[in-house]
Image 1 (spheres, chains in turn yellow, blue):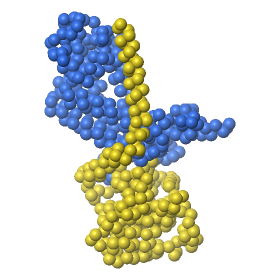
Image 2 (cartoon, rainbow over the protein chains, first blue to last red; image 1 turned 90 degrees about the horizontal axis):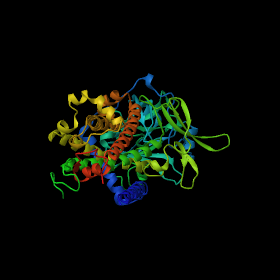
Image 3 (cartoon, each protein chain N blue to C red; image 1 turned 135 degrees about the horizontal axis):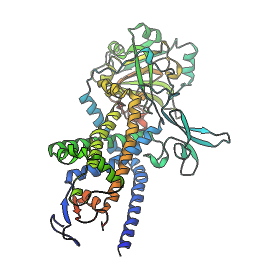
Length: 256
Length: 286
């Protein structure tokens, strides 16, 4: 009698273990694809962002390193070459007729050649780049603070986000883009970089111009920037989530 | 419901003791939910770059640990794990493992260990951060309650005289001689050391190293980078701490099983623990 009970219990235990294994593997995979559950999981992003706003000073500066800390090789990730005819033509004449277009909700839309950007006051910073994949690399970046550009074009009161439109399309023809809020846009370390490690920005790293946003992950830092657009809201752009990777499920707030 | 002091079948001296208040039981089972999810979604995140480093940067040619897929001479894919420069063939487990169709493909941890099963970093992050919040809030509430209710002082922290006898307790445990009767109603010194260590050392360590991977928190609290020796070091310590949690959990479940599985489980589910006056608790648990 007793033996049968314990066998029954053992059988029950085995089934329970199997069930929990199945639940965790299959159940969670199914849950991952349910919209309501994804919404629940995603609620953590808002919580994280609010918690960060609450406990981190808005002016906090990302750590800056020394020349001795530089990565021997700064990795190339994502697009390695936009490969479009337009881009190839820019490369051909060393970006001499490339222009950065800044518009949208601004008083004074403007265009900047690479030479004009280089003539503006620059900032150089040695910072750590953290990829969402988990790796980190340290590079020396030189560029123009985004604040200077914004002060020239004068955002209208309704503008809330700065959107960066890139020159690189994916296989489906979706162009890379990213958006940040004004708090990040006016941060002193937020620069439009044209040099990496004292050289013109290589093509693999986003030539001629890429964003540096030192308190967030790498995918926020759009490469191959062609156009900057100030907007009231970004849900009307592309997939509506505010960025190329955001449209594929990554967080808009990439501070973790 | 059998009340304390009442007896149930058999020996009249057996007594029921209310051992775990509701908040302890809730915190415990929430952790049981969180830990496997955090571990498996953590493996999913790790798989996006299955290598560990020391310091601030990740120089690809100098990993502490790396899981790679290499083509053997016969064209077959092999999983190779490199730890401190020593390489091991880990085909099927690390570096390269099989998909549902049975084909080997490049992968850090195998499909059965990750959440979601397939490579899906964005969803792995969502699981990890949501349950990270649950785990942290649960831990904060538990720690606060432990302080306020004096659970920490009266049940968890080992006393001086207990520490002095820790050698004897270790010897007893190694011989599978476990406390019974009244003694089993309270945590013994090894339990106290293990539980206090996990709640107040290991858990804060894994949370802090996790937070040290946040570039925004790095800017606000650079001392965290200094404390752990850089972002990549923090990532490595986070990974080691996850394995410490696995080790602790295996040992914990083993001890629960051999010291009276049903009595222990019942007490963590209902709060009630049966104290047996004769024999060891784990001999008669039915």
